[in-house]
Image (cartoon, rainbow, N blue to C red):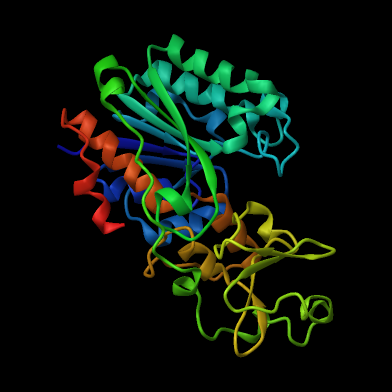
Length: 326
């Protein structure tokens, strides 16, 4: 049986990809970003991405689905953002209530929401409490946990995100477990090209003189923090952020035999767990950096989706049978 999903705040389809790998079927996809549609539709067949403000979608015209998926806007809750929360109209903080409205009208069996780690502590925990209470009033039994890409996806990126999973069936909610930590066996070097276009190198650019002495190891990833270089001493990539597309100052930096350069958009997608055959459209790098940083780490989502699928089928979660592929 193919359980159906609605892919909300879909971006370029990272959550969809993880759920389809776990056996789910996407029947609806929406985002309000026309550039995301170029990437999304290049990689997925029906349904194509509907570009529309979610507040203007007539819910009763949406197809029926079993699981609602939503990486709803996080800028209003993130440390990097202005932390305006539900009051932040511009960043979409109040769009959570549209999700609640869709859940109330469509009543899917389950949902999975994703957001920044800071959601749980925002406004001294009040924001998360409002979200939890709203979901429970709709009849859902929920569990929430912070998962890190490098400990739960075997992807060498230090990226912590909160996942909220809910079921109408209390027994299914109690049976659901978030995936456990797995060893990080992959190096960031496995995701980095040995050679790329000259435009990504700093060798002949003004910034080079400021960073050449500090970016001194090929075994580490660095970031230019406007005034200084920060080395990521864990040997993994720092969190890829949506604002990589605004000026490039947050794009991770590496060194190799050719020189010092920033990661390419393609490498950023790979470091989010997107497959090598995931295609990027011919649009400005700034848009692609934003899309990569705004997405999810696909293997982490896939592991959550696998456990949701097992519970919905009435099966027992046995992670040892599944983690070998990661």
